[in-house]
Amino acid sequence: SHPQASAWEEKNGGISLVIDGPGWIHPTDRKIPHNKPVATHEVEGSFVGFASSFPSNYGHLIHDHLPIIAWLLTVVPETTRFILHYIPYRPVAPELIKVVDSIFADRVMWVEYDHVVHVKRGNLLVIVPDRVPTYMGTSFMQPLQKWLMVSHPNSNILHSTDSPHGLIIFYSRMTEFGVSGGRVVEANHERDIISMIKLAMVRHGRKERFHIFNGYDDKNEPMNIRDQFLLFRTATTIIGPHGSGLANMIWLDFDRAGLSCDKRPQVLEFVAGPDSEMVQHGPGRGKYLGYQFLFRGLPIDYHNILYTDNSNNAITYIHLKALDLALNNMWDK
Image 1 (cartoon, rainbow, N blue to C red):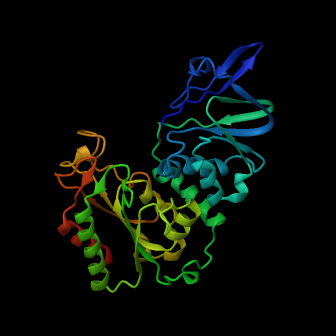
Image 2: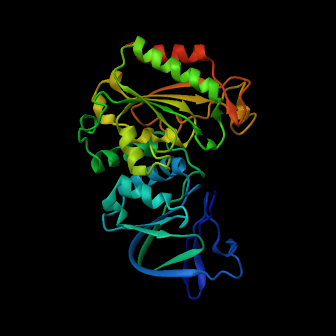
Image 3: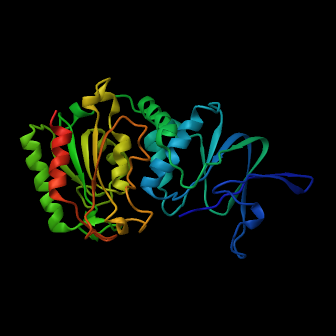
C-alpha cells in the first residue's frame, strides 16, 4: 500500500545525486527479491516522475495522485512525459487517467514494481510530497478542478439521461456479496436512513431521482470508472459513510452552480467522532477524518454526521435525529 521509489543520478560509475523525502529511498535500500531480475527501460526526452501510496486504490488515486498530476501539468511543457507506477493485475490507475483525460493518457509511461527507467538523453523532474499520503486541500484540488473542466466541458449530461433534475446518491458499503471494506452501516439501520432521506426529499420538494450506489452496476459487475464518472456527474447531493465510493464527488458538475453558493453540489459524509474513534484508526487518530480535509478546495456545500458510540470498524450507526437535522439544514433553502 505504501510503495517506495528511488531516483538518482550516476556519474563515473557511481551514484552522485539521490532524491530524498517522504516516499523516496536510496536506491541501494530497495528490497527486490534476489531471484527477480531488475527490468530497465531506456528512454530519451523530458520526463517527470511521481509516486505515492495506494496505487491501486480508487479513492486514494483520486485524492492522493490526481491533484498533484494536475498541478504538474501546469508547470511542465506539453512535451514532457509522465512516469507513473501501477499494478498490472489491478490496472486501476491507467483506467482512471483515460477517463480523466484520454489525450494526456498518451503521455504517460506506466511502470510496474521493481522496474527502473533510465533517462539517457534528456531530463527527469521528480516531485517529492510533503508527506505520504499528502493532504491536497486547497493547494492542488483547484488545478484538478480546472483540468476536469477542460477535459470534460459541460455537455448537458443531465438532459441526455432519464434524470433531467439530477440524482441524490446514497453511497452504501454493503453489496449483494456481503460487507465491503468495513465501516458498513448496519443493514436495518441503513434501510431507516434511506427511508428518512426519501421522506426529506418529498418534504423539501426535491425533484431529483434517488439512487443507491454500492460500486456495482445493474449486472452486479464492478462499475467501471467511466460509468461512475457519468453517474456522479449528474448528482446534486451525495450522502453516505466515509469511503472510496464517496471520493466520486470529484466528478460533480461544479459549473452548474455558476456563481451561486446556494446551487453548489452537496455532500453529507458520516465520519468518526470523539465517541467513535474506533471506526477508523483508533483513539487519538480517528476522529473527524472525513474528506473535508482533502476536498476543501472544491466548491462543495459540505456537511458531516458523527458515528454513534456503538459503532466499530466493521458496523456503524448514526443518530437518525442528526440525519434529519442535517437534511433540513441542507435543503431548507
